[in-house]
Length: 150
Image (cartoon, rainbow, N blue to C red):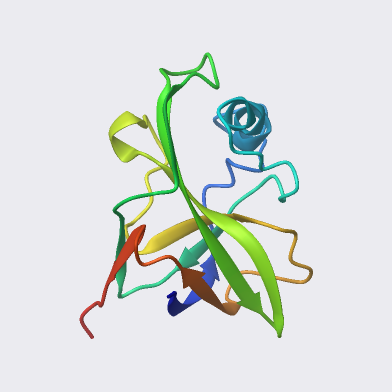
């Protein structure tokens, strides 16, 4: 069984694909080899994230497929915790495999996301841009969606 919901691509901090004002490299460039060492190979995915707003709904990762603690991926701040939940994106009639990418806010020093923004690592999606609508398929055993108020 899958949870299916609609979302809109919104601009993020542009840190994952980098470089940015905070990092001279993309964060995923440094993180992906460390995730692979821990058992999650993301090398086939685009080395950046899509920020997808599901507002006014919110999400909570309840039992992610992968959680990695104390990942020391940069010398610019202390190690962080990350969780991942498999998902599928549907855009313009095509499906793209991906993972919800969740840097745990309690271990992050900056770049906090709203609980209405899902960060997704996925296969490359041609022509996608800010403001585009898409559909997400999520595992309800790993992620809980709360309907928002209108």
